[in-house]
Amino acid sequence: MSLSGILAADAAILVALPYLAWRYLGLRHIAPLAVVQVVGGLSLGPSILGRISPVIHETLFGKASWGAFRGRRRRGRVVHLHQWNAP
Image 1 (cartoon, one colour):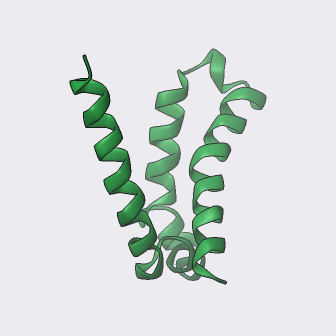
Image 2 (cartoon, one colour; image 1 turned 45 degrees about the vertical axis):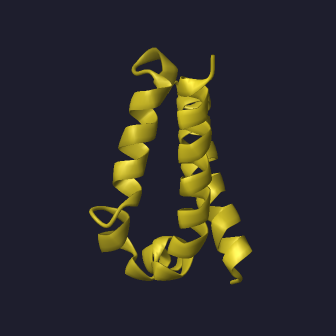
């Protein structure tokens, strides 16, 4: 899988999956979206997904995708800081 494909899969899993679970599984009546996103992110980490399927975890969140995330993380930090410092 190419780096852009891995990044697209990561983004879809990290953004869409918690929202769909919150919206269509009735979790919105139990917890806010932020809580569902945090629990989903923790479960996608090495603690649960890494133990269930290490191959899938390494493919999606391995060292190959770190470079792509690093650039987006830096841009996100700049935008966030600019919003807080804007007049």
